[in-house]
Image (cartoon, rainbow, N blue to C red; front, side):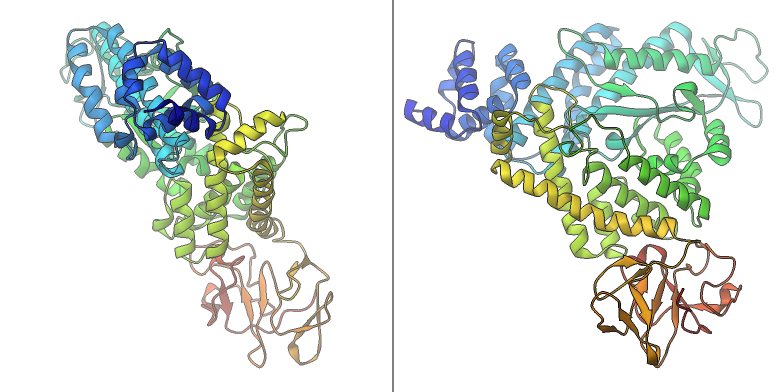
Amino acid sequence: MRKLEWQQIIQASADPQRAKHGFDQLKATNAAGPLRQASPEEARILAALFSGSQALGQLLLKHPDWLPQTLDAELLRHPRQEQGLRREVDGWLGQLLTSRDYATALTRLRQFKQREMLRIAARDLARLGNTTEITREISDVADVCLDAVYQVCGRQFTERFGQPYHPDSEGYWQPTEFCVFGMGKLGGQELNYSSDVDLIFLYTEEGYVFKERPTRVQQSSKGLANHQFFKRLIEAFVAEITRMTPEGTFFRIDLRLRPEGDAGPLARSLSSYENYYAQWGQTWERMMLIKARRVAGDPSLASEFFEMVQPFRYPRSLGERILREVAGTKQRIEDKVVKAGEVDRNVKLGRGGIREIEFIAQTLQLLNGGRIPFLQNAQTLPALEKLVQYHLLPDAEARKLADAYCFLRDLEHRLQMDNNLQTHTIPTERKARERLAALMGVCWPAIRSQTWKNRFVCSRPSRSARVMFTSRRARPTWRCNCCQNFSRSARRKIPAGKSQCRKTRSPTPTASWSGWTTLSPPTARAQCSTRHGSAIRPYSSCCCSCSTARSSSLKSPSAPPTWWMNWNSAAACAAARPPRNS
């Protein structure tokens, strides 16, 4: 490729000075030959990598031999599948485990992780993959690494202590299985470049460790208790995942989502989890388990766990206490302590940030997933699509939320990959903002405008949900269909059973609040937001003026409910009169 073409590619990058410096350094390594043979597309990818990430640029300079296989333009056009990643690792991991060369296995695994992250970042910065593909690839790499480290640690502990067993119902000793679950972004396969990996651990049942398989009546030669064995295994596993070495580290681990948090045991048996969630499980734990997914260990044990927690994370009926806790969780998210001056620059915890979009989807899944199994999905974007399909969220609002989510995730990736730091805050320096905007393919005012749009998009469903959750025993709060105002004084009765907007004075045949919809005359009925069947019943009797306490007085309305009522599948009272204006 000619020198003029190189100069044009460098000048077209997001940071020409940084890109030129990276190319000059790369020419001084043994990658000079492949660099001279690079195509214009490969040169553009390389310039985007040097412009977008100092940390990954230094990684490439440290391993210039990765250039041909990592930055091949044809290979980067398509994402790697999890099966291909596992096939590559299994090709050399099995031999190293058989020869008991555990140190080499962990070293090669760390290099594999670093090389794959370099490849994924090159695809991302060159705009060869969308947000869903990038987050899925990062999550697949994490799955493969966590499973391989578990195999290494498990083999070491089994050789040292023996195999854990537990007695079954007939007294026979059975091997005790173990499982690792990913939560949060890892569970939803939405991991970013610098995410903490949220994990919980599970084993089958309490028992003991034996060097050899015990017989039915054998009670001697016991080793560690299963709980102690798995506690030590988890400590070794976490130490390997978080250890900093010359080849880099794997991930940061967060274990606070386990029952009882930092005060709870690192691992529990299946029956212990069942007892905890049945007696002390909280609403935030229901929402947390929506994203649970097995990442390592025994698949059959994972299936038993999901079957056990299914009624807890997707209840078919919810009490008023749970609704208040959901509202409290939302309020805590809004009141999340962010450093002074960062509330408008934090793309995750700020107003209209990533966390708010995820909360909207998870809340609607929690409220409706028990009776609509198709809503049970750990990923945010597919969950939004299903909510639209079942008329629980309007199509236009869902599209805006999805666009805002993808935009913010792209922005978050470019903030984190620069120096490989766990940051979610837009910088204040002008040069850094201009480079960030260039990496996003827009100008800085466009990013600022988009963040304000995201706040407005997220505020509408959040506000509606908050009104529903907090106004159950308060005075009815009317939402006027004319001025769209949430107010107790927005509506007043006028003759002929109609209503009038207090703001515009225009007659509105249908005016609604978060629990009522007055239908047009002459069939003056009242729609109640009480769900028919095994649903939420905030009132001891029908919430209309008929005071009927039996659920048999409810029937489906002829007209579909409005979107802010759809979360609770409205029903209509057959004997209702128009509600009193309170």
